[in-house]
Image (tube, rainbow, N blue to C red):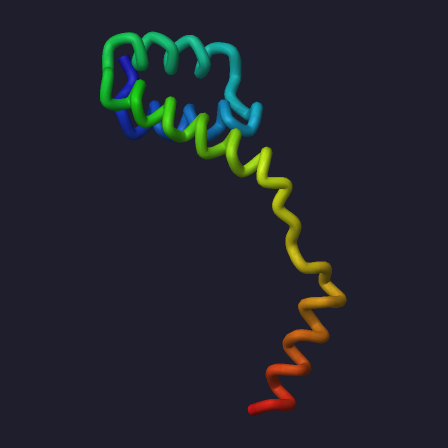
Length: 75
C-alpha cells in the first residue's frame, strides 16, 4: 500500500490528468482504506471544481510590465 504522502502526490496528479492508470488504482485502494486521505481528496476535488467555475483570469504580460513601470515611477 502507498503512503499518505504518495497518495497526496497522486491525488494532485489525478486532478490535472497526469496520473497513470496504475497510480489511479493505487490511489483508489489507499482512499478505500484511509478515511483521512479520502476526505482530503474530496476537499481537493471541491476546490479544483470551484476554481474552474470561478473563471479566473491572470494579467497579461503586457499589463504586468505596465503595472511594474507604474509602481517604479511612484517609488
